[in-house]
Image (tube, rainbow, N blue to C red; front, side, top):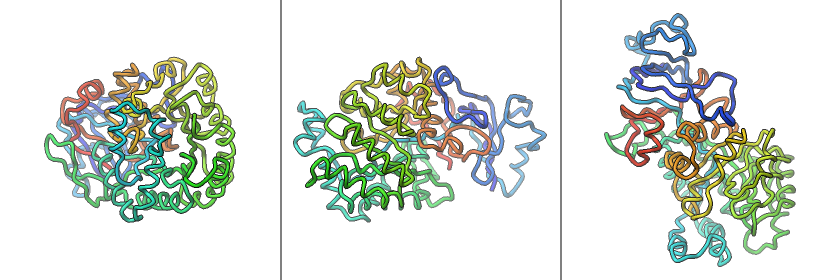
Length: 440
């Protein structure tokens, strides 16, 4: 199957083949092409170039593909006229908790009344509250609620997402969550929008052939489950890990003040590695916890949160393969510090951004808002923020070889905007309707 997108006003996010992430000054750069076309064959980007067919900077020459507009006369080729709209890679969200039951809006009122995240947790709320709700919810209902959030994220332009367990906090319920995530992986095509009303932020869903990419993370060590001592629960998580590995791609630990220590984290990550699960870490949300360092020592794919860091964490990450991931939506909702994104990039490190979509500290999966927060509150340029929510976010899931940029051979996970949009306007007018079509 071939799809030709023609009359693209701005094609953005072009990355050469073989590049897997951007770091430091590279994050301020992205390949662009004006007045462009893009050809998709069998679900992957085949070629792109200028509508004039004279661009020698594009990935191929016209002689390689022939006249791309000839596809308009081919019954096998779908032709989309972008009418001057921007085409960019779809968002990648490398940190979500969207499999949860019900809502924690009551805790929203607690926050308004002055209670901190830690105080709510100490009163039995927070993660434990979500675990109680999830325990009472059937697997089918949990899947239905979670798929509604997947559809919401896709409608806002996210076509790759990592989903964590962590609201089960006992073997039975953690596995229930992982089974739901696995079911989402197999049915995610149902969330792909195929039609959007003009000026709307909401897309209709249909059973088309494209599907979002879903990665699964076992986060049994999100909090100590009810009825366990701390040490009993650490051992229980380690014992759960081989069974969890039947469904999960990664293992994660909330290594932070009041939750799990670096020593606990090291034990759990080593059990995960023995079961074939690569680490991802929650670290430095509430305090400088030591989680970054233990993550790097265990070759974590990413260390996430990083609202509170020092030069020691920057030095620990320097030269490693671990991607720093910041979650500005959590900082915004909780009123806690925003991570030192500017300092990380200026130190030559890579950076990804994610939504942290969850019921207690970041109840939104809108990656465009994440991008805007990074510009407004963390002083990133629009291009730096864009790279952090697409290409580097894909790297934080281990999939930047297959998506996250405009590169021949990568999956055609794309956003087509209404005419007149560019990356600066995307972050500046962060609530104005902008998506014409999400293409999977």
